[in-house]
Structures are given as C-alpha cells and as structure tokens.
Image 1 (cartoon, helix red, strand yellow):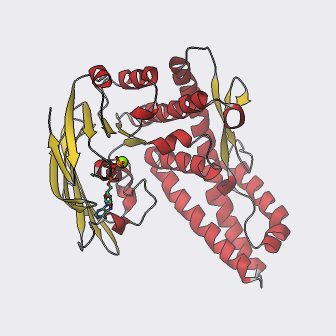
Image 2: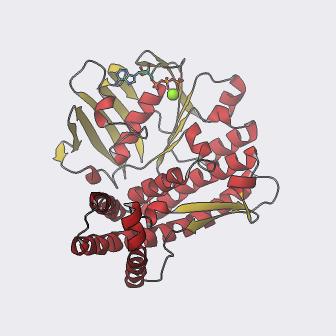
Image 3: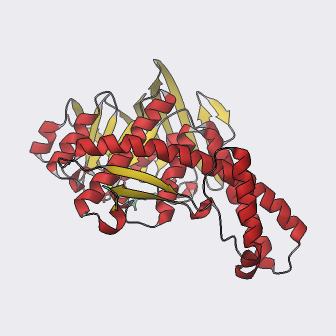
Length: 365
Ligand SMILES: Nc1ncnc2c1ncn2[C@@H]1O[C@H](COP(=O)(O)OP(=O)(O)OP(=O)(O)O)[C@@H](O)[C@H]1O
Ligand SMILES: [Mg+2]
C-alpha cells in the first residue's frame, strides 16, 4: 500500500497544493514552520481520521478559511483508491472513492500509517497515559471492534463518574453502569493482553538487531485488573473489583479501578528501562516498539503500512539511522528534516527529494 498523491485545499498552512510521491522514499526538507509536519499530518489522518496532534479537527482548517480538504490517491492491492476528508467548523466528512461515509471508523482498515516523531522516543519515560494511547491507537488500526469497545468504555466511564460526582447515589443506576463497564472493559483487557504479548516477542527480536550487546528487551502488560482466560471470567473478575471498590469510588467520587489505569512495563535483561535504562537504551527500546508496530500490522492485516518519520532521523545516531532505513525495502517512507547532510542522503536508497517552503512543496530531485 502506498500514497501516490495528496491534494490539499485550505489545510493548515496550505492554501492549495498537490504533490505526487515516490513509490519508496520521499524526503522533505525545509526551514522551521514551513509545513513539513502539516504535510505528514494530512497523510496520517487518512488512517485514523484524526490527527496525532491532540486537537480539534477544525484546527486543521487554514486560518481564515471556512472549510478545508485533504484528498489522497492511494494504491492498495493493485488498485487505486481515493480518500477525501473534508473539514468544517463543527465536524468533518469522509468520502472513500467518492462515496460518503458517516463514521470515522469506516476509515479504519483502509489505510495503515505508522508515524514516528521525537515524542515517540519519549514513550518509555513519559506517563502511563502515553503508553495507553500507543496501545489504543495500534489496536484501533488492526482491530476496528476494539475501537467501538474503547468508545463505549470511555462513554460509560464518563457517565459513571458523573453519577459519582452527583453525590446522591442511585445504586441501581450504578449497577447498570458497572455491568456495561465490565462488559467493554473486559474486552479491552483481553485485546491488550494479546497485543502486548505479540509486541513483546516482535520487539525483542528487533531490539536484538538494533543493539550490538546481546541484550534482551521484553514488554509486559501491567493490567490494573488482571487478565483472565476467557471473556466470561474477565467480566466476573471486573465486576468483583467494582463491587469491592464501590465504597471507595463513592468516597473519591470517581472510578478508581479499570483499564484506564493500565500500563506496559519494558525491561532490558529484566531491569525496568524507565527507571534504569540509559538514554541510548531508551531510544532503542522506543524505536523497537515502533518498528514492531509495523511488523504487527503486516502480520495482522497483510498490508504494508506507510511509515512517517517526522524529524526523527536527526535524533538517532548514524548506526541507528542506517539500520532504520535499511529495514524497509518495500515500505513507502516519508522523511522530514530541516536539513539533510550529504552523508546521510547517500545512505538513503532511491528517493525523491522535496523542498517545503511556506505551504508550497517543490520536487527538487
Ligand atoms: N490551521 C492553520 N492555518 C494556517 N497555518 C497554520 C495552521 N495550523 C498551523 N499553521 C502554521 O503552520 C506552521 C507550522 O507548520 P509545521 O508544523 O508543518 O512546520 P514544520 O515545517 O514541520 O516545522 P519544524 O521544522 O519546526 O517542525 C506554523 O507557522 C503554524 O502557524
Ligand atoms: Mg515539524
């Protein structure tokens, strides 16, 4: 799967621009604030329907314009596909091959994009919320039913918390929310367990390839409610926890237990990277997770995802840069950098080079 073309109209700092891409490697250089990340964002939204920047959809409309649009031409399984995302103040519209789709989830399973930015290098050090977001996004991509369970879980959690905050408690209504929370929360736990097991084994072998010392990386699911074997057992366990904690929840006026407190632990040779890892080990571990993500998408969907490397090459040392670029022979890659030195450029195989300047993209090689 790869992008052939993107057409942007009033999208971020692009008034109108149409760019055709190289099948394999596309490099974008340009000074700060010229539109490199904005261009990556326009590709990214084709896969999840929303941005990796935590923003409202309408923020992507060019300042002063009423509507914005991004239209991508994609080749997938030897046929062309067109995805158009229209942005208006109160929402967005999605068209796939000219047919309008109502739900954002219709986009899932169409295009697979993996984004890697300097922020991702901090996934090890950052708060658990970032690691949960990572798992959630990946699972949404490969398993659209996860997306609907996640939405239902979040909504129920919010309703339950609103009820707890009211103070005067109707225990019957609380029972209803508990039932729903256990239902959807249990699905999340079981999917996360499966995914993290896969992540652990795939990232371990990638990490081995990235490091010269024979160190071993492992990922473990730190579930707030311990995973069970079956969905039924999981629901029972979940319900028990909620019942046991009800007094506490009533006191604190919020839901103290559940997968919204989950985390992943990463160890190198059995030692937690977060507390004890060196900078280099943390980077390699973060990189391994990202690369594992690509492998897992391939395995689960049979599709080659597109890789976006936004400003990240310059953060890696030369060995890791080389390893990263060489790992992907069939994958379409987009690389952005403020500047590209000749030595690095010589290592990038067949590629197209673009110059980005105030919302315009020009192919220079
Ligand atoms: N909705 C919008 N309308 C118009 N311009 C916008 C909008 N959103 C962001 N911008 C502008 O886009 C510019 C940032 O673009 P972008 O993040 O793509 O830069 P960049 O080329 O990646 O720079 P850097 O090298 O610093 O990462 C900023 O000047 C910002 O003001
Ligand atoms: Mg940028």
